[in-house]
Length: 166
Image (cartoon, rainbow, N blue to C red; front, side):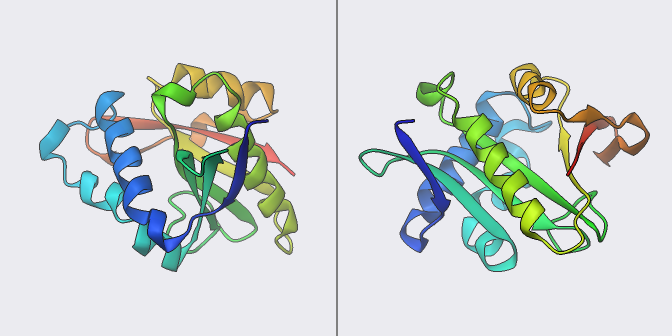
């Protein structure tokens, strides 16, 4: 592995925020494109780091090539996780780093953190139907689709859900 998974540093907040926002924009994940109000949330790494755990994948030169937000169930950044679960969100990998195992390593790190939480039974996530490459990672790592938990953050935009029993 030619990268390291670790907690984001304050001096990296802006870089990760831009990577996250651009990934969502370029991958067509925002209903309203450049005008989507969710862009501000994606860019606000400082807030996520204060209220949850934010991990990055850093290359050998220290450049940010990926990131993810991890939250315990029932906390501010958990969209679907309830107490006794954990969740990850905003998993992104820089286009130039895709295919190198960065996304999978970030998911493994989240699973490790979930297992370390007291009484945490599963790790859950929400994903867009367009994120086919990510779905392959989730399937390979043992996540199962949980269609009964699919939901709509905004009308006409359904997110698919997955869970990994720990």
